[in-house]
Image (cartoon, rainbow, N blue to C red):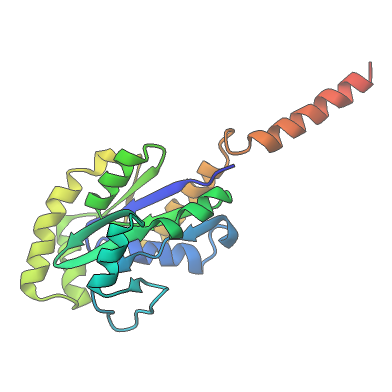
Length: 213
């Protein structure tokens, strides 16, 4: 039984990182059932970020060497920095039946969904433009010019929400984390995921009634 490749995308500032953190910290799903894909990036760590937890922070030559070695499931250059998802951080989990949750931008998600149509796309949408602007400004991570640039890109991203199988409107982070957990739980209950176990149970019923004559 292979795991599901789950792609979570959103405009910058929509809160997808907070949603994932809530999912994991509140243990809304069994921790052993899902792995979070930690992306590689060439940007500098922000205050509080931990290498190997938030990102794998690498220099540009290392990243380019990984590109040349075809070690990425997807990669892109965003605002002058490289970001990518390594195959080594995804495939071993999927092969063991563990779902892999990828936090990638819309451009990267489009590439993965085209090359892996079996992947599950989830789009996190802010409740309004004004709320997104307030969140970006409140983070105090970017200059006013950078905030405006992200807001401009957000329109292009919002227009593509229909490419995703699921949409979560993040008007409340706790509820949004619960919605993400519900999607992951529902995916794991599909008959195709439980085929072997369900077949064994059904065979047990058949054997019981056959023994009764």
